[in-house]
Image (cartoon, helix red, strand yellow):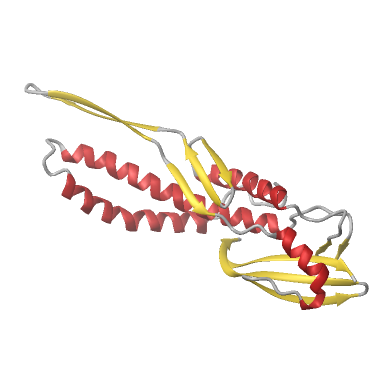
Length: 225
C-alpha cells in the first residue's frame, strides 16, 4: 500500500476506546440483571464483559478501517497513463470497474483492520461488509472443598456493516454525456476545463473518518472534451 502511514492514526484508536468505555457501563448493568441466580456471577460477568467489549471494539475498528480504505482507494480507483494535474484521465480504454474497485477496497480494509485487531479473520464486501473473526474461547473454573466446576464457552464474533456505494462505472458513463452539467446523487460535483479536458471533482455528501479527520471523500478525474 503506497503512501500510507505504517500504523492506524491514534485518533482512530481513541474513537474506538471511547465507544468501548461508554458501552461497558451498559453491559455491566444489563448483565447483573441476568446472572443474579448464578453462584459466581463475578467470574461470569468478567467473561461476558470481555466478549461485549471485544464485539464493540471490533465493530468500531471495522467501521473506521472501511472508511479509511474507501477514501484511500478513491484517490486513485484506476491507474491510467495520462494525468492532468491531480486528475487521472479516464477513457473507454482506461476507466474504473466497480468490482475491481470493490476488490481494492477489500484489500485495503484487510490491511487496516489487521492493524487494529490481533485476531485472524476473513472479510467480504458486497452491498454490505461481512467479517468473520476466528472463534474466541473462554473458560471459567473454580474448586473448593464443597464443589468444583468448569465451564467452557466459545464466542464466534461476526460483523456486518453497510459498505459505501461503489458506482464509478455509472459516474463515468454520466460524465461522458452530461460533461460540465454532471450531477450525481449523494455527491457534490464541480467541473472545470483545462485545455482540452474536463476536470471533475466529486465529494461525498456524507463525511468519513480518514487522515485523522471526519470529512467528505473526494474523487477527481478528467475526460477529454
